[in-house]
Image (cartoon, rainbow, N blue to C red; front, top):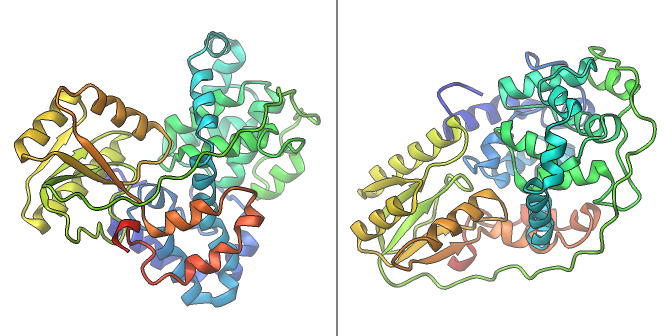
Length: 390
């Protein structure tokens, strides 16, 4: 990623540059990873989509306009993120279980092993894995097929807990999405679809790395993973009425505006930005808040502590925070913790984008059961609009 941070202008430039390859060329070449210096096969737009500097709907519609039906594979891959997110939203217990494990004595013991230390420092002796480790730490990115193979080697060859691998990814990925990351690692381990695991092979790695790697000694059998009881589905939050009192717009890493915040009849008293995450993301949050403040002639305050948030709300004379939906994950957990520590209660009003509301509701089963809803999403008049604006 560029050292100056992430911007919507960069996202739009990348999309325009990649569009000629978003059709049949993408379907043919998307699994080939020639290395970090040759990125033509994939868009590398994931960090921008992850933080909603550009919306999934913008990518999907641009590809369909450019290529018609030939863009279906690219559109499917864009929609996988929406599917993963909806799947986890309806199963918050999966995230809670993952977090609990990371805090456990078992996890701490695993972190002290020589195998774990070799893995996170790229010194396992498995050439592909070690190069990918360095690439991840240095660039904050890995090609999707490299991620799959990395996770497989971590779980099945090195026999390390999948949760620690997922945490290692989230620590370094600029596009780190709690839902896609957690559920993808569970899939590799054999937990997402019981009885199905992903075992990386030297032949597949050779092909997908364009001949750069052909590691030996990879596991041919899956690591044993304790099976879990089925997780019951939790209902998704429904739309809420727009607050009538003066409100503070809360900007977080979860949604940096994409094609607009659609403020409508919100009585905007001010803007508060929760600056969190890696340096490029934090800079993008602050820049988004400042730009919107200039556009709306409104003051902006940055915060990362309860006292700073309380001071912002008090200064603006507001009783409510209005924000884009905070999905299951670190940002939501941290913000609810901050709000819970404030001396004066503040109401949190979350707005769900229509694209998310429809996609998430369709993610109760597998992706192929989800896939028919993509046509509905593509036909929406304003997919980036908010559900409570209907």
